[in-house]
Length: 252
Ligand SMILES: NC(=O)c1ccc[n+]([C@@H]2O[C@H](COP(=O)([O-])OP(=O)(O)OC[C@H]3O[C@@H](n4cnc5c(N)ncnc54)[C@H](OP(=O)(O)O)[C@@H]3O)[C@@H](O)[C@H]2O)c1
Image (cartoon, rainbow, N blue to C red; front, side, top):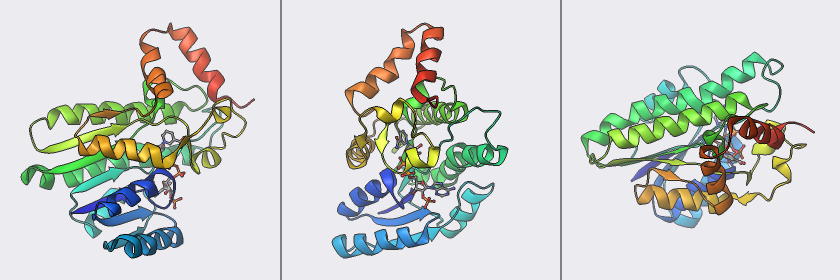
């Protein structure tokens, strides 16, 4: 059994790697930071005796998925976890960063899924877990591209999971809320209301997603408050929804 985990050098991705290794699954860990990947790999090999390959690679590039697939032509479990956000006015954020965000959060995730799925279908077994966010359920002023990209991940994952019903291959979409990882630093979200709320623990979030994936669930929203965030857009007037969403992530 072999699992490929993107964004496995820290945060939620590293917790997925730990869960998989504890279940004796061999791993391919991908992210840009070679040193952090290698440290994680050494630790997982020592603790669990599994094989761990590391690939230091920038996945926020066109053709990144094709390059990764060429190096790792098959896996039983695909965890599309790598992602980042940018906080700020859309017209002021650097275009290059927005492109990288879309390439990583949307394009590479889609293309990796497309690459590994045919073999999974052919052997009627495989698990795909795509990490979206509670941001998938509503528009996010001042994080417009990130929220829209996670809405894409949610819609794409649910549609695929239905296409694959009865095939032996499952697609699970994990939608965490604010979680204690390097994410807030990278997104420069320190001075936002969202950052003042209690943060979930990355290990617990990964565990919820992992269990959901093993059960073949199509959607996992861990925690009561996140379930509320996921449900509330259905009953909240649009103006109120946009205002409250803006207040959560606009810099103070
Ligand atoms: N933390 C939250 O509050 C939260 C909430 C909802 C959803 N999420 C989602 O959860 C997922 C994991 O995020 P996290 O919270 O664990 O954040 P994190 O601690 O910042 O981890 C992100 C991971 O993605 C990797 N990564 C970033 N850019 C990359 C690139 N261009 N190419 C390859 N790898 C890249 C990072 O490694 P390198 O820097 O070494 O490349 C790291 O391993 C993301 O999809 C995020 O959108 C997070």
